[in-house]
Image (cartoon, rainbow, N blue to C red):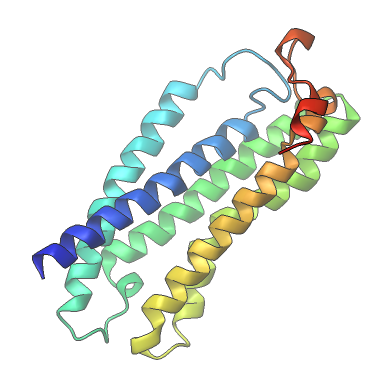
Length: 195
């Protein structure tokens, strides 16, 4: 059992690392970083610190929630425990933070291509913050013995799909239309065709 818990905590920490790095990219993008302006986002250190603390708290709360629900023979849903409720609520808070920043960036942008990016890809990628709340709600309809797998497969599958969406949205061929970068900083798009 000890090795199982070590592997569980390690896998959750790595999964949450991926989630938090993606969230950091989304939050900085919503503030207009490299899209509406090339200078650093003034709040970047605070955003990085908040996301880092969120990662640490998430690892602790998910481990605690999983441990407390495992002793109840898997009939207690991890997101019905108070640590799980805190995590779902935090994702909704991050969604609010993201959407507020995205709306401000959209409103402050003057170029139509960038406004369109914020309105389509920015809004679409923002739905990523709903993956855990929606999956958690969806998990209430499953029997306890399949709920855990169904929720984590859904959350991880949605995360993968949104990462692919971001890769597509930010592909270098869009750089000349979207990003605020000097010409010397851009990668030759023809060099990217082989990827």
